[in-house]
Image 1 (cartoon, rainbow, N blue to C red):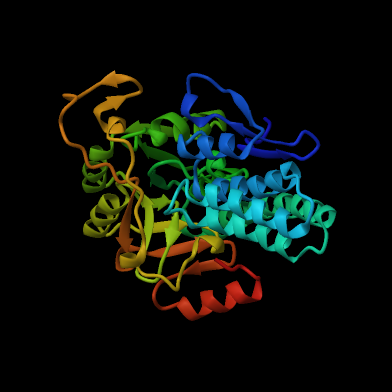
Image 2: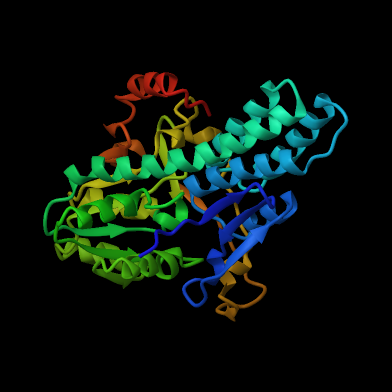
Length: 351
């Protein structure tokens, strides 16, 4: 079976190709963004979503801008590319990987001496971001094997799979690696209201890979924990700060319930997701269209006039987290913050 690759860069066109995730599981459709506004729209609509995949898209977007920009001088060229980069940064304020991918390629553009050099290096840098994320996810999966016992019943929330990365996945990367290693595992996937990424995307991915998965509503997780049907919780992350982990809304609820039932609760995320210099209070949480809650895929479920609060993410305090599974090991906060700082410096991961 071909691996899922949600974001691909085609510099010869030039364009960014992506799996339109809002149509899954009904329709598998690959779309093409040939302009920066097209790519920004795909990110805002969640056609492209998931922290590492956003990093890949952001990197490809800057490279696309470099190839499309026409300028007479390197100064004008860099100014336009930076403007396009800022447009992409403003699409999703919470997911830190988006900024990492954009800045990684932008730094290469800004250091170039000529326009042709900038274009060539931007293409190479974008490809490097995608290739690096693929390697990282496989490494996260191997790291996470130690926390998944044979026979484990695993709860996950939202989609932290191949669709959310370059391929393989973070939380689902751990699950895939456990399955590949021959462990007898089963998965409970929370539907993840309001946009149903768990029911639409995670179950679709796991069924595609023939991994045992059962769909539940978000409100059923606590009952399963109380009944002793959950052995471990593994979820992804959109931003990890010094005192909390930001992930899809509903994650905090599962962490509280897991803590109450003495169930290990793990985050799976690349080192680039760490923003350890920030704290929870410093982060802007994206609030989305109220109609995402008032409707489910076009079907009206509430009165039009009812007020809605619709944050995309919540913050889980670090004391509720058993460990953060990364490509370089399993860490805890705040205890391992200096180790994380040093690793990021050694690996040149700057956010």
